[in-house]
Image (cartoon, rainbow, N blue to C red; front, side, top):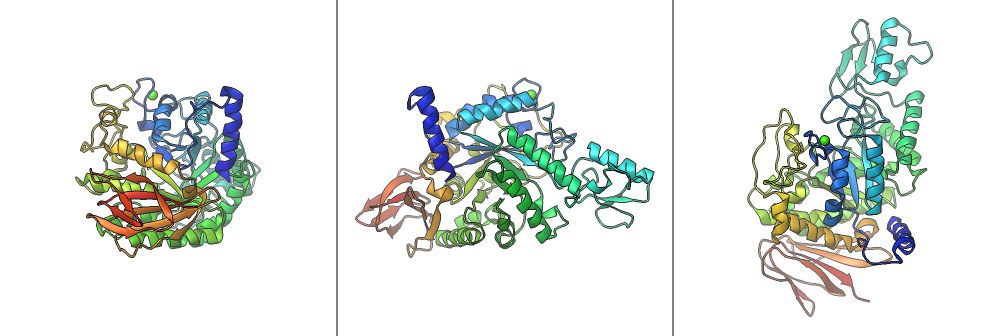
Length: 506
Ligand code: CA
């Protein structure tokens, strides 16, 4: 639905501008998102800090990789390097650039059919946000009953509880679930909701496609029904600007809570069970249990659609809070590549964490997971400075410029898989069905929408497997070595850790 509209818009634009030439990027049907920590992506002015102009300069790179959306980690003013504690919801942190830079980024991304969603941190503000400064002043002076006291913006109490911190010079404490410098907002307050209405209005009018919502589990001290009420209100609000707006929750919990609760709000949510080194993707690759993962993917897809017929799962391997995915299989590069096949060809929206496509490493303290993108080892143009506290120096894969020249590189593998995905809109908005091959090692999932019906087959086995496929013709293949995928009659021969996409025969 979303893509069809976009396609029509694209056609109209093409007719107007180029007379429907073919120079424009092919429609990116696959909806692959790319998560960017602005600070560490590309530094346009040589001050060591990545910035919005840097992303503008690298839009061609992202377009070429096949990306159709960007998640920008927080860009609003903040005193911390990560900016997950906002000082002002209506500005750009000056180390990242200006509002004009942001507007330029949105408009240049749009020319390439790339959407932008921004991180929105609503659980808490910075303790230097003027709301908190005013609120604590009112608390101290005993003026909370007066108009514009801001006391209702936060959660104050005279009772000392866990995760509450004293307001100096007063008998009051304030709630701060993460750290004392991040006071929790009172999302029940009508005044706070009115602020959020203004914030959403501001950014939707800047042209964002939606929001990644930070820390939603903590909105109401893990009171799930209240969290869902808020998220439903928020989603309806955003969709009043754009019915296809993309809202994705960071509800860092198990999938049964996510599908049975968080998908009720109409938003999407990250699929944490699939991610990380101990997650379901990695463990099924290790155990060569493709059939098991296929069953799980189809069941989850069906569950989320039972609450919201337009539900979209948000799939990823790792993010800025987790160890880098290239370490999951250590020196086993084939499994690292195959892992990309598996998650990038899943139903939903896959998120690539910047640098994942070149196998960047990093674990331990958070700063290690957010290191500068490695554009080159011989030219430091655009490279961002080291983060204070980071102490990670290990490398396994070459810099981007080297990988671009190497046909067999991880980067070129990612590019190929994303190209395959972008041919298939049914992976984004289709319905899914299990395709059994009677082989525990083989994953088979059918996706269909009104444009196509496809079958994705992965051989999770580390040896050749043969399966029978009927009613579909072979469309695309992704192999890691020299052996090819063949189909003779209905018998498909799949080399170790290979992937085939089939299209339904009419
Ligand atoms: Ca800079």
